[in-house]
Structure formats: C-alpha cells, structure tokens
Image (cartoon, rainbow, N blue to C red; front, top):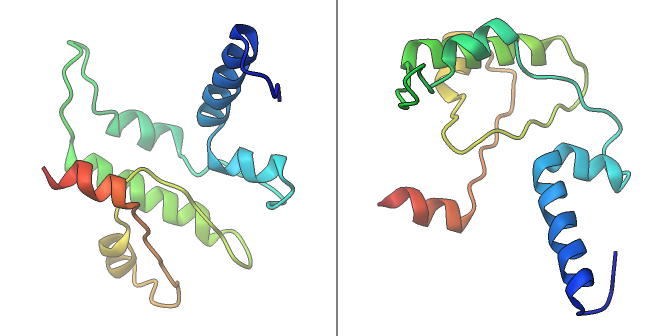
Length: 122
C-alpha cells in the first residue's frame, strides 16, 4: 500500500479501498488469515427469482421470493459444521426463517452499524 500523498499514491489507495469493498468482508478476513474458508451461500435459482431489479430497471422487492431465498441460505448453512458466519445486507433478517424452519438450536446474532440504522430510519 502506498504511503505517500502524491496523486498516484492517492489514486492507488482509493483503488485498493474500492477493491476491498468489492471483495467483501469474507475475502478481507481471508486475506488477513482470520478466516479459513468461504463457501457460496446462494442458490442461483433462488437468487435470480428474488432479484428486485425488473427488466424495466425498476426495483420491486418480491417478499415471497426473498423469503424463499433466505430459506435456501439456511439450508446451505445447515450442511456446514461448527461455527458459520455469514455477512448479509441490512435488509435481511433470518429470524422468521429460523422460526418457520424450527432451527431453534441455531444462535443467530444480527448486527447493524449505527450508520446503517441512521440511513434506514428515514
């Protein structure tokens, strides 16, 4: 990582920051050797059916498809062993999915940053 404040250094720092954001938190943790492996949490069919962006470019969330997508995520997680950590966007809340699937042996912790809370409060 460049340490200077020249134009090229600032450009490279910004590019690195953007690359990390695109990689996501799991990949960042793997880079730091804080995570051993990452597996896909998505079922492609469920993901595609829940895609909120229509052919016309407008966004419309299909809640039923989104619930099925979250159910599929939990089915994939159940195949794993030990502690599983997932990182989802703030719009996801798996509480109702866990209840519906009777997965009361799962400890689910949902975390939201103060910034996220502030943005979504409006």
